[in-house]
Length: 213
Image 1 (spheres, rainbow, N blue to C red):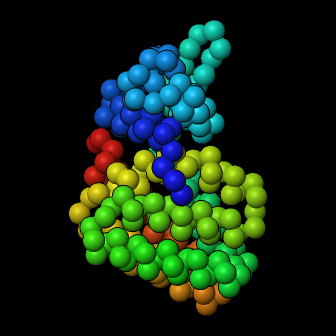
Image 2: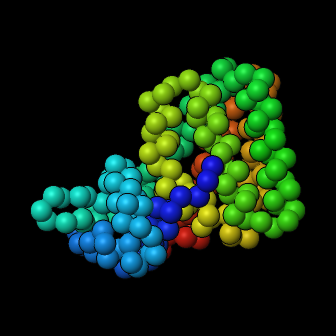
């Protein structure tokens, strides 16, 4: 999955929220001003703002401007929702995945192992996202897959942030292989349980090492 220009805008705003520089109720600069700050086009900036509004991190009020909503707690709520969503996706993927999907997942995991050996966190994270999207699509539920797509920007920021912490991608690689093997065995309960465990570890890492106390 290609990195989009709008990700720079999302990263800028989410980092401001995580650091406490942007608080609930704060009014954000205009789209044009943010485009200049982030070095992106107005179109990409508008796309980023719409995606953040869709998942409730900001509010766009026509005639008034754009405002931060719940701030950091909203981000954490979304990560908790991800645990439920992706556990279900893993369960359903174990039932619905076809041979081509399984080959694609295995190729992604082998590529992630190569990125791990090379210390390429960014390439690892891109394949990490693609792994989760492949499971989401294979789950067969178009509404849940659309939900996963809607939080794409948040997941990109979260993965790029957490995966840079010491030992995280080593553990993540191990968890992904465990999930894949459960899916390949067509064991939905185990696949869902392992995905829940993986996302729980991600959330704990986020709260411990990224989000302010």
